Length: 245
Image (tube, rainbow, N blue to C red; front, side, top):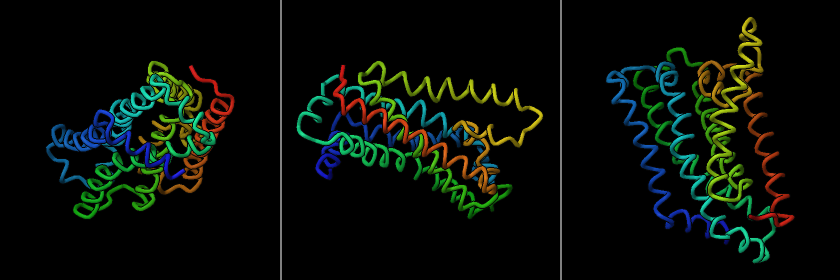
């Protein structure tokens, strides 16, 4: 599997500069915060996280997510799926190679500049209303990893450039928002309901409060693991049955 991972990283690094575009998106995202809020350097960790949480979520969806889905979609349009499976590679090795290479490296590219900026505000201005700062950083990475890995797996289910581009956005950009709105209306008298935190956008928006609640931390981890596991099984079945377009 190491050879497949090396090949995946080589393609990612040399196929139209996707790696560098993603790094540029992450850095530009942080710089945009300063253009919006000139007092960003004077805010504490809780305030900074509250102000930039949804921005980071949108950055993953619109920036890095777009690059990932295009990269995966182009591979299917070039019949890369055929070559990978016909070369004798086991389906789980192909899937894991993409998750461990594209998923992990994309998550780190997004996470590191964001975490560095948050750490700077924490050490310079204190934690503010943020509970359990260390857990906040961990949860931020968990949600980021959940999003990037899900984008890859949803794109692999789409198996062509068009579907690879639209399926993840329908899931996270539209369905996630609809579910959150329905739940929040249904449980508007019960704002502490754990159901409100099943969607990734609500998790990111309330991250400073979630970091201090063990029950809600469990919800975040379980939703991430369950969705990625279900997607993995579905993609595995696609590869196992050689259902390519």
